[in-house]
Structure formats: C-alpha cells, structure tokens
Length: 213
Image (tube, rainbow, N blue to C red):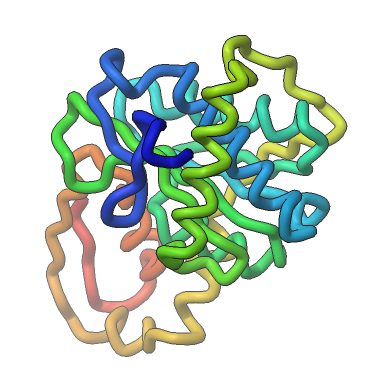
C-alpha cells in the first residue's frame, strides 16, 4: 500500500516542493498517519510534540499538524516559535511523549519543506517504523480522510516555549563555564535558521567570552 502513496520518507523525513507536493492536504495525511501509528502502539495518550523551522509557511503547517492530532484525541504540545530539530527530540524524551513531528526540510533549499517524525526515543525513526508510517499515510490518502482542515481541540493543545529546558540541559553535557571563561570572540551566523539565539542563551553575558550574532 505504501508504494501507491506519493509521500515517501527518505533520509530522516519526507521532503517536497512547497505547493507542488508539499501541501496542507499532504501534511494533514502525514499527521493522520502519525496519529494512527501512535494509536497502533498504544502511545496516543502519551501525546505528540510539534516543532517547526523558519521556512515559509512552517508555522502554519505545524499548526495544521496540531489541529489534526488534537481532533483525533492526541494531546499535543506545539512550539511557540521556531526551534531546531534536536529541541523537539529532547522534548519528546523529557515529556515522555509518544513521538514528535518537526516541520523542516533540513538542508534543502527554500522552495522545499518537509515532515520529520521522531519516535518516543527522540532519534530518527528506524526503517521498520517508517515503513509502517508510510502504510498508514497511504491508507489515509486512499480513504480521503485528510481532505479538510479539522478544528483543533483546545483542551488537548498546549503551546509551549521549548528552548529553556533544552538550553538548561546543555550545562549537564557541556562545560559551559570553560567556554564562558576562555576569552573567545565568537561570531555566529544562523543564516536566518532555527539555531538563532541558542549559543548566546547558553553562554549568557557573564565571563570573558563574547558572542556576536
């Protein structure tokens, strides 16, 4: 069944050209597929974490995913702003969520967007999980189950700032004090990407190291 679907996951996600194959209808189909996958493994009640990058339309596509998930009874935490993919992975683990979705096309050019799925362990989905997810998505498309935008269920939707717990956790794995006091002059350009602000937030203003972003 998965072979009949135009949505195929490659290296860590599905990517397509915006407005050609990357449409709200296909993103809804992916979201339905994720929810069916969670339900099939008894993880729907654990919830879903949804994040997005700074590409055109990413926030709207993420909101569409959240609307689908909550309409299907899946508690959903939606990032309140652009976040890097590792932040969503960390939040999935921190919240013990059933999984996570990131709207991003990674290194692809601006004309593209994408849909990443992170299982409950936070990492990239194993091939067997992707095969199952693609089968669910193909079934959704065949049934015409994702043709309309659902109404988000407010009681199941939480909008949250995901960065602070992630930044705080960095101190447990990186010697930030050593960097702060190293007397470095660091220039950082996130190129309008999702990583903007994280280095400065992690190091703070104290110490002899300065960050220009």
